[in-house]
Length: 321
Ligand code: NDP
Ligand code: OXD
Image 1 (spheres, rainbow, N blue to C red):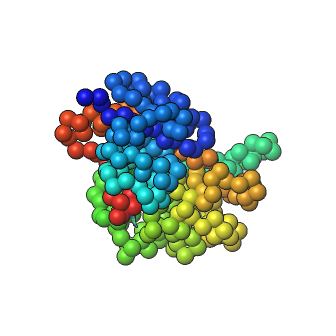
Image 2: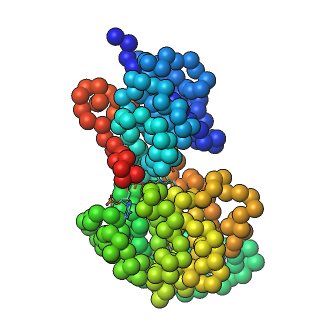
Image 3: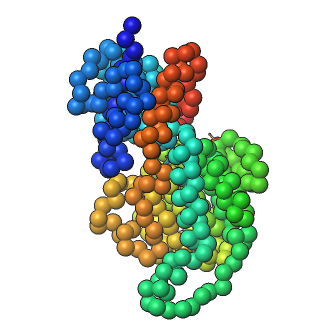
């Protein structure tokens, strides 16, 4: 019997999401089956057993009546869950070492940039001024990680290994060596009150949407060495209220912000965030999905599944992540 085809549905519009690149990687990893890049390729919808997707247009997956699993090609599934007609088959997300290491690099880099006063030093350099300021040690800067999932845990461990006092917050309680773990809404206030640099690695769900706003920022520690709290959001733009971020930077509730994700992406060119001196922007590339590594991840899961083993990292649709 012919092996079930894999349909590839990718939007995104940037180099890393070039659909042909993904198709060639999947073709390499799953040599014995058809890989149909939609909408360009023809495919018999009944032969499609798997779909690998990134931000697919709502409704497109409904055509595949023999679908057995959907693989989201990134870690966050908020976009795919918007589709109210999503077939009722397992939805698998990415949790792989390559993506995790990329995110940890991003988080460590930006925590260090704030800790080591890099914006001040770059400004001095641009003016040819030799004016070192006193530098405090890592142990004086309390980092708090919102979200202790696959990504948050790894980043928290790396920061702890650099000497930062690290805490984390999640829905259910975790136990991570060296990391002070807080859980649930009841402990959010205590977590924020001991945090100088807030790293956000939460999924976007009904519960988390819009939570990065003034009432939360107001609870962050104000007695740390940075001169005010800093927020680093690499989760999703829908978590943040950008007007509040700007207003909080203006009145000193926040000292600085590093943002990889935005309410609207690409960030519109007239957004005041672009030119704010206390804002560092990256174009949603904190942790790129690497086509080679993720095609391998999906291929391995398909082979396991067909051998009767359970799929890994299946999304709980009710929870939203
Ligand atoms: P996980 O699902 O592994 O972890 C999510 C964490 O958030 C868990 O610890 C979970 O708690 C916690 N959480 C969820 N909802 C709540 C809540 N209401 N209150 C408290 N804690 C909550 O996800 P990952 O770590 O793999 O990824 C996190 C997010 O990072 C993705 O959803 C995606 O949006 C974003 N991302 C961004 C990228 C970028 O390039 N900018 C790249 C990759 C991912 P619990 O453990 O108790 O369930
Ligand atoms: C992801 C992302 O969710 O890249 O993987 O945003």
